[in-house]
Length: 127
Image 1 (cartoon, one colour):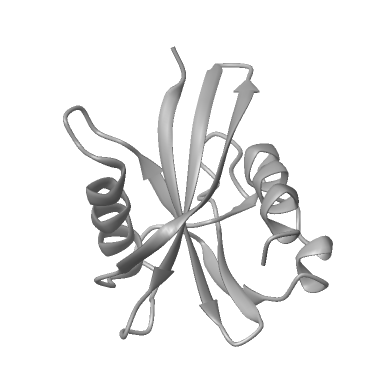
Image 2: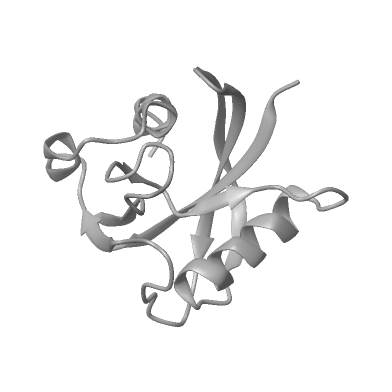
């Protein structure tokens, strides 16, 4: 069974937020949408709120589900859900190495986690 993972798509103008994974984690140094694993008994919405508060220190408002994708990594399959997020607060780093606001052109220069890359390609058409 696939591991459920939630991620937030936080926009500022024509840019969106990506974070760089800590080097000591799987796929360390790669870029991804902020988020994380859904805990037992948690809804997708409560998971994304908790993760973004833990990672970025924000209290996100969940707008809607933008898309989802399944991806098989060597250690197992994940089901990644991407939510459109709004926040009054400015995000700051609590876990990731770096955060960056990018547009669809600039994101091509970053090395994304494969599941995030697949999801971004899927939603780009709809944004």
